[in-house]
Image (cartoon, rainbow over all chains, first blue to last red):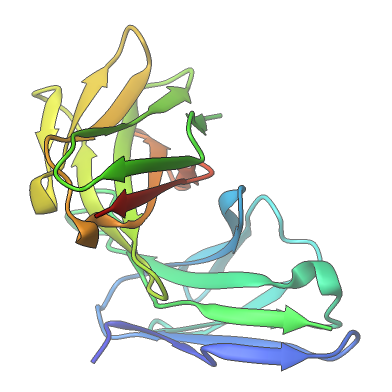
Amino acid sequence: DADVTQTPRNRITKTGKRIMLECSQTKGHDRMYWYRQDPGLGLRLIYYSFDVKDINKGEISDGYSVSRQAQAKFSLSLESAIPNQTALYFCATRRTRGDTGELFFGEGSRLTVL
Amino acid sequence: AQSVTQLDSQVPVFEEAPVELRCNYSSSVSVYLFWYVQYPNQGLQLLLKYLSGSTLVKGINGFEAEFNKSQTSFHLRKPSVHISDTAEYFCAVRANTGGFKTIFGAGTRLFVKA
């Protein structure tokens, strides 16, 4: 089983719909991240969280919100999806103790907004 | 702030040939450097990292990279590639003190031909 699990893996939706992408991890890491991947742009940080009470905006947070329901769960929401939010979304974790800077990624959630 | 430039968006190469994927970074502070690999339909996984010490870093699958502080580069090399190395490769940077965010380059798609 994957240590970082994202659901759904694929989703097609329409403009204006609310969408939630979920991430859960069994690695016991405190730090969790949401990235967006677009061709030619690499990965860009949307939001990150260091614990349940600590949530921070990344470089492209407009149009997105997050919820850290527990240490192991970090959800990304699009309140009203638009076509330019079509992308591949990744959740990642990072340990706090003994941090080497490595990020551990889920397998991604491909979102298409029509 | 940090930034990363991957100088080649695509690199086609024949099997068993050597390959170099180029990465330059910009930062006003000392950094940690990473290379991640993304195989088709998968998340990213760490290939290798430079934190300190020897500037030549060896990673998984026969890859290595050399940190060059004066040229602010961290190029990835492999002396003989296999078909299975076909993937997208991302260079990434993080400030080594108070570095909460990892910044990714746009990616280089390596295509190994038979």
